[in-house]
Length: 172
Image (tube, rainbow, N blue to C red):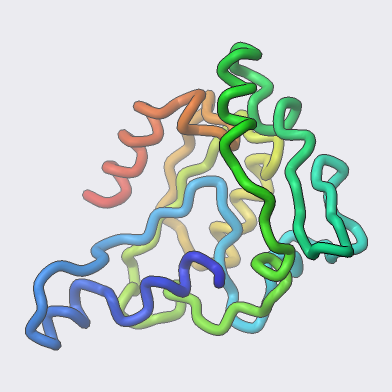
């Protein structure tokens, strides 16, 4: 299931109407594919399971993908020891998570209208800034902040700046 589908029914507005506290007040995408109903993540990336990026290995026998080129694409701008630590953390991922059509997008849900923002990572090699601009536009997200030194691994390269960008978007 694509992550954005998890917020269905959880907006602050909907929860208040149901007499509940809390709720999602904003959607912030950070160098991410924005969800479009009926499309898969691979569709949005302009590819399919037979034409994955060279830094992704797909094992057809298991259905799993592994990000083998992470050092050069995600962790190119941090020390090797730190990169190796982050590379060791992710598990293989089911291709179906990227190859199943999205059934819900909060970006078209009236309860999230004008609640989305996009942080563009200026040093990203996985989704270059032009691609991030395109994903923000496709998602109808015009509230954007660019963090120039952030790579796709923004948590390792520009954590504080990314937090500042998120707060700026949430508060605007």
